[in-house]
Length: 159
Image (cartoon, rainbow, N blue to C red; front, top):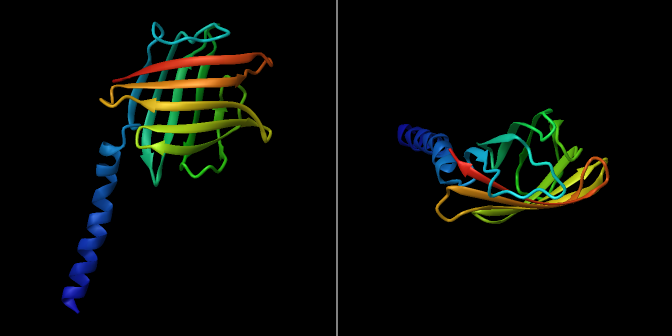
């Protein structure tokens, strides 16, 4: 009986300890700053600044965005995704006006996301982390809050 309890305790410890290992091996996790020189926003203007913090959360990740828009308005929103294709709520005020996001992982460094407002698709994004893990490129198409078509490439450098 003692050996069974010892085995169970070791198993639980291994599961608990693997959380930080998952975070370290997940290329999405970290703090990322927008590189405005390498990014393109159509139509503009580009954000004056943007920092995204990505944390491991269960079988997915939690994103937190903080920045300043091109017109000087504060940007602050967050969401969690599990890469299961299901809609997840966006809290705060996303510039596109989206209120939910779903994501599907393509591989360990890439996923596709769909943004919705009131259940209607308003945009799609492909998120790709470079093989060296230092750069994330987000290619997005959709409609902004004023109804204009958007075609953006956001490049983030890992901090």
